[in-house]
Length: 234
Image (cartoon, rainbow, N blue to C red; front, side, top):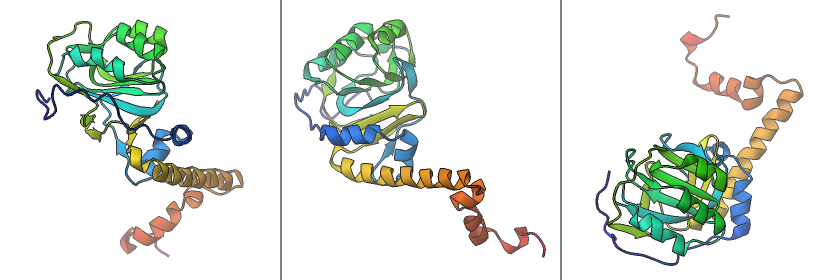
């Protein structure tokens, strides 16, 4: 739980925004496929789960670092959001002081924001649901903490153990969250497409009568790595 940041009090009003077509292409893949793609993909820790508004998120990050439990810079961050953005808040994982509620959530949704991710707590889950804002967090808590700062906007943060830069693309679904660096997005889309095609090939083979271990190559892996003493006697 970090109580300071080297850029605290900084507000960067602009952030990189990747090609919307590339963002849309990434949304076509499940987080599992993106995670399996390898390459420069950050997989957010399992403490952040969908809590309101549904799990489907895909968009560039507007980042906020805040003193754990403080709402000052979270409230200000909506001024720099654009349609299609995801607000990502590094709240230090604090669970007993919410940093976002339904008023902020509804404002984000009205601005065209497509998601909210909080490494910490949120509140007003019914209101976030009503706003239709997909929200991931460590949990919910009815009380807030302070509103005096410090904080920072559009700076490097961490979320669920993963580094997030402004403009990095956040993809979320029911399985969790992944983070793709904005300058490597095309590369990751290509890698995820290869994973999707490989999985489709497995399904075609299984539909054609192949066994799961045969279709996925597991039999071949076992033949390679299984020690002689673990194999059936001939």
